[in-house]
Image (cartoon, helix red, strand yellow):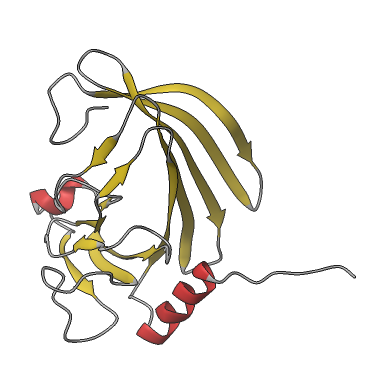
Length: 210
């Protein structure tokens, strides 16, 4: 994998699979990934985890994504732009090609007056599109403790959206980000339901045995 906005030879390398789990409730993959510069020196070590939950209809899946990044060869500046950085969802290329049975993406925000090019740190964004004459709705929830400001790219009609942030890392410093994707067939859930999902994601229930 290449790194957007960096020298041509900057790459990301999958080093090891740390966990691979599958069952009736969830599947999980955890990987160690090295971000290498143009001299092939590792500048960031990433532990990337994807957990995919089975959910009942009309839901398809819930995906929890976490990334733990550590600067391993000096200070690092994570920068770029909202069009190419961050953690983004991309719909099937038939949307961009306007293949028959597809429909361009539309977006919904937590309020009517949101302009993602101006308003930052949105809690969630939803996107709907048609593929093979089926409507899909995708919501990305931003982790409350992720770096700020979070600048959302959420206006491209071919169906790519997500939040971007910048971050300065000192040598040996680590930080973690987390996001959740809700993917379903059919129309977008209500804002009240999506607000509730956002709160559940950021303040999960806990149990204590006495």
